[in-house]
Image 1: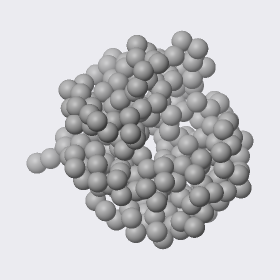
Image 2 (image 1 turned 30 degrees about the vertical axis):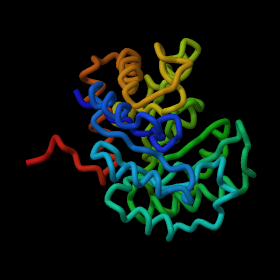
Image 3 (image 1 turned 30 degrees about the horizontal axis):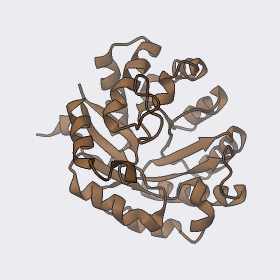
Image 4 (image 1 turned 120 degrees about the vertical axis):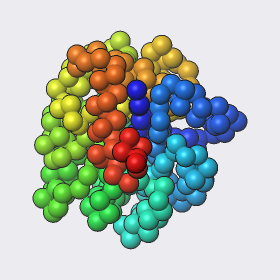
Length: 264
């Protein structure tokens, strides 16, 4: 059984003192690969260094919506140049976060569109952060897809059913985190049950959002297995089947990551 944590933050200080052990625990839990996600282009080098150090780790390059105003000078060309590195397999995370509103909404939208341009031109998947911004996110996805399709993933999905439907309609994938396991997340499980199986992914968003039974503590990539277990129950398949489904989907979307199952 192979799982992939499609979204974590291994560069965060939460892991600094035991990163080797964290990655080993993930491997022991069946998590063969982890994608460590960039939140500031200007702090990209440490993220890349971690990806270069561990064969199981890949990374993205991009600006989180919280930091959008700080990095309005980042261009699609700069993202594309950094994305040439073999360990950089995605663009982002970028998006809209109206829950915290840490950056002006216009800056968030501007940054998102720059990242979309980079994803469209590179063919790398755009990791999209969407929180409390369903209507505007749906509008941007529609507008930008009309200009030309681009691969994307709605990560750590906690939005409404309509955004999930539109995301799939636009060709996107939906990734579920530990939120899926929370007792008060039946609405998210109901949405997960409607997502086509060929568009499902799992992630941790570690160190945040540890799934049950680890809720309240630090999350880590090994716990991908807990979210996968709940997703399997939600859509009515076995744990081995959900591992196969989500791993197949990962390699279909993250085309730059070599699929070891095809080696030789």
